Amino acid sequence: MTNRLNGKIAVITGATSGIGLATAKRFAAEGARLFITGRRKEVLDAAVAEIGGDVTGIQADSAKLADLDRLYVQVKAETGRIDVLFVNAGGGSFAPIGAITEEQYDDTFGRNVKGVLFTVQKALPLLGHGSSVILTGSTAGVSGTPAFSVYAASKAAIRNFSRNWILDLKDRGIRINTLSPGPTETTGLVELAGQDKAQQQGLLDYLASQVPLGRVGRPEEIAATALFLASEDSSFITGAEIFVDGGIAQV
Image (cartoon, rainbow, N blue to C red):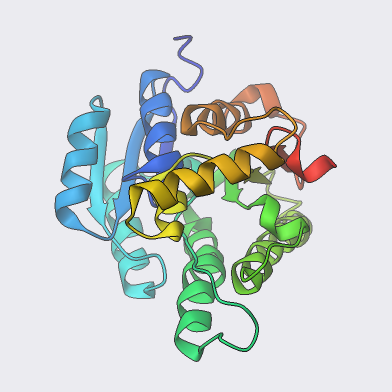
């Protein structure tokens, strides 16, 4: 590794599996001091052990403002600042129009919109000039998917947060970008198909057939782009949406 984040303080929400975990491993390997969050303590503890290095796990649900307050109180006490904030926590589920429930809507928008908004807003006192904020979007935010409209709408909101917040914060030198993965082989994705392994593989095979590169992505590939956005290599990039999607959003 190249120590591209040596001396940096990074916070990653939703870092116990998939893209968040892969990014935490990459950031740690590049020299970052890490704080990660997850909603389940036993899974969070396992992730901390797997990541290794200088990492602190804080049990938190990003949709609960008291949890975010507790997160940032600890970060402030231990390091006093944040250089990189990767707002990755979120999720969704399938439901076509006609079957969408208030519970599904509240859960999806609570995790993907409310959680993102207040994760960033409450971090502002700790974010200094030149810090990098990365929001996890999705190709679903710019394309149509059957039975996925609530999730897609929540991710479209993320994209528009970034293009507006850079104007609100233009005098502070804080960069905010949206990282939008395409289909990526994570637990969260395959479990959309249920617990049956054959159905999970069927979903992955179908998604791969839609991707111009002919396969789904790996969490480590998304993490590599997160590293670019976190590092000084992207110092003149802000307000952008970076697709890491094998080309699926481009056709």
